[in-house]
Amino acid sequence: MPRMRRYKYQMPRPIVLVVEDEPSVQTTLCATLTVMGFATHHAGTVEDALKILGNEHVDALTLDVRLPDPADLERTGLSLLAFLRATAEYASIPVLIFTGMPLSPEDEDLVRRHNAHVYYKPQRYSVLIAHLGQMLGHAPAA
Image (cartoon, rainbow, N blue to C red; front, top):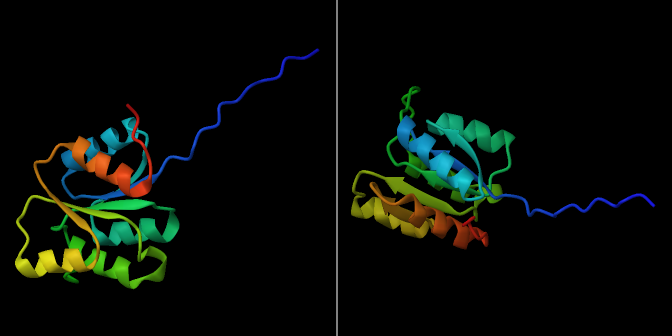
């Protein structure tokens, strides 16, 4: 009688889009997310992030506030957040703002109104990942 193979069912890994223009932060955050059981995409500009969102499935985002704007369209991480909340497909996607610059009271209000969460650099990646896991109902790998 032939032996039956047993396959371990694996839950799909949540996909996080890391929008960050600092290569070292982008690389380290993506690598840490991957080790902790997430899949990642990464973008260094709002334009690149929009391309990925248009072509790939994404479960959550981390957004830097200051991003390069080669087309000079005044696009930032916060303008991308506003776009996401105004677009039905992305209106409820979890978003963590990860920034090194203090937010103005107006920007803090925008983040609050758009149901995002702010973390300031430097911050332990484990804190961000635990929050992402909680928001997505995903227990990060130990």
